[in-house]
Image (cartoon, rainbow, N blue to C red; front, side, top):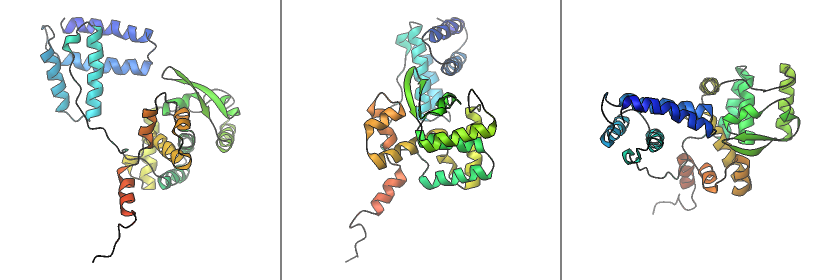
Length: 277
């Protein structure tokens, strides 16, 4: 099978993913990553495993993180298997399992960000941050926040092919209803803002609030919610339900402490500050 035949196969593969009910965003990513792989291949040559290995090496020499490289490899391997070229698949890069969370916003960070979001009149972003830190939702689940859904304190959403319940606190529900009334929203979605715009606005507010930009991204607030919930209730089963996880192992990732938090624990260990003798 050569480059031209793989291009044709990609069209059929995309249709197959649609029938498997993959989301349009997921299918576009598959197409983009597989296209990049196909364009890397030499013209008028039968694809061989050494071509795939060379592509893997090119990724490793780029500016990608290991997690991103492995994601590319997984997508290409799945496509190769679908094309009945399983023997051409390559291994992912082995990584050490991390026992610490990456940078995550703190309680003081969240307070500063909310305050500065209001100051900069980014009220939509203010409410988005409040929702994630109060409910622990995925950013993609913002689409489920409609005028009708917030009239109660729970509603059903569908994400990643799964059904789950979103739970609202009384304070959040009332605040969102007030926001809809002020905006004149009578029905439909409350938020019509893209992920890229949310991300950009978060960075702008973080800069104004003098919060480390590395800590400020939509998923960071979901991690913050999980850590706060565990600190108060230490119930991983309830947290898994709230986050919409089917595996407790996934939930435990969210409950790990950051390296900075671990460092502070070491500093505060009993007996750490003994007088020198």
